[in-house]
Image (cartoon, rainbow, N blue to C red; front, top):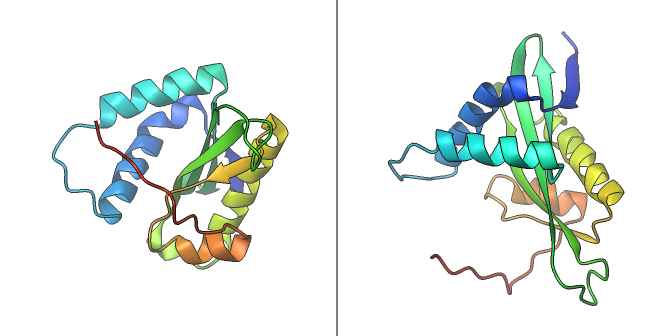
Length: 150
């Protein structure tokens, strides 16, 4: 069966959220909290205001790949004069579908969305598994990235 690509719709949220949790666990998350309500709230709010877009890869009636791009704005700087940034997330392909170009196709689609939104840059905190894809696509490591947990 041919893989179909389409944007995430509200009717997909239950499955999408479950896939997101599987992805986070695969990447090493150990916390024992129910993340479903927070994820549902996030996606419902940001899908309705247009500040996030997600693309799905579907085989038959099964979602086998996901991607997401959140749009944020910060004061313009030389590396991003528009101040608009895309934050890439939720890049996941079901294990039996990996290495078939699905992640690259999903990445192409959300990067195109970021360009259309007016973003001057796209950022991601990449998993070990994703580094090869993002490097081949043209992403560059930024050794200055830091975070502070509140």
